[in-house]
Image (cartoon, rainbow, N blue to C red; front, top):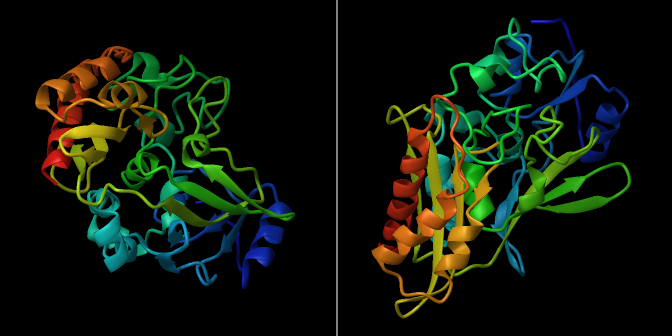
Length: 326
């Protein structure tokens, strides 16, 4: 690990100033991702700014929905009574991630900012455009079983690892951000980025910005939602494919559906084609199958992950069936 300076911030403004004044500094919340990156010499900050004591842990209702403090722990969020009763999809997604020990340390903001677990990204002896732009993508022609089937380019085929973020995408969350000048609100669909020509950019934050909260609008998904995660082992494994699904029903007719997929793209993948197909249709398995087929048409496999296309189709149907059952 490269030597670094360790300092602590006492309030958000101070933390933002500290980060803004040093292009090589990084925030430390729970530390469950940044420390791994530093140990592997993937991240090389010369200054770590501890933000763990900032008063950003509150979880509660707002006039328009719900607010999750950026420094609230994942465990506290998943097990909060308000989240369990009003946002069960989110609770299930968080509890499907990592291990209990990591969830006890990891923060909500840090969860959104975690970087890909692509093995080539972590191996500094291999070319990686995310780590060193312009060096190439080793996974493109390498072992890419865990990698993307949507939205990838020759510059990067990595996937975004968070379970929590997949549910937040389906819930139309907004990320509240503070900088030197003001606060801004980033719709979740715009927060994470596809690789395009700049795979080194995971999200739309600029250096010097601090995530302070995640806001979720009121919804009618509590009774009809699901989170399904398919992985190689039952715990402490990243998704091969995951699906968060919520149904707004009137009788047996779908007024609208919100669906997001994980393990398939550089960001949580909103299944807009499936959503569009389901709107106004009866909630039947036959329609769920057609919706899944409509979504997966655009999937494009790499050399080792063709199985993800069929897995994505079946997982999407399974999530919708479970959401219907409630």
